[in-house]
Length: 205
Image (cartoon, rainbow, N blue to C red; front, side):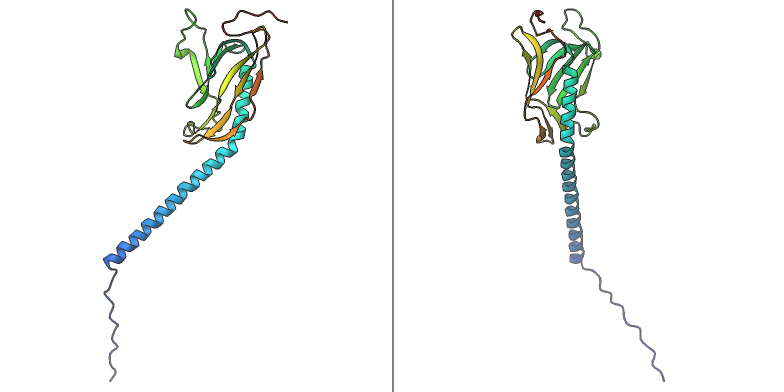
């Protein structure tokens, strides 16, 4: 007589609590390492992009400064950190520097009263950095700055040009230098007999 076959008994053993905790810890460790690697990769990518864009941005800044300052027909003030002038295309422009870099202030109306009061609504402020290289989220990470800006005058106190020293592009919270002009930038004025600040109009050729 044939004996009935017995089905093998299934083991009821499962994972222990220690094994589950070890598995969870390993998964968390893998996730942490992956997140750190991604963050590092993003930082390396941003630095590479900043380094690649810096020379172009510096060249753009030089062109913008030349276009603005070379057309000046009157210099109102120059303090070393900012310069205010009038040109044939705008009534008044100020190039100033703050913690975010060099800014361009274009005034739309003439000064009122004694010539020192000008409402904020009559001016527009924009960064020297073009939007192509710095969007709103990166605007404060990349900036163009200078060490000093000074007027160049002749023996008759006629302003012949403007010298910008230490023009550079920095990026990141530590303001790492990405590109810098080795020599001072001299910008020659197109107009002749440009008045120096607080000076009478010189007589020249």
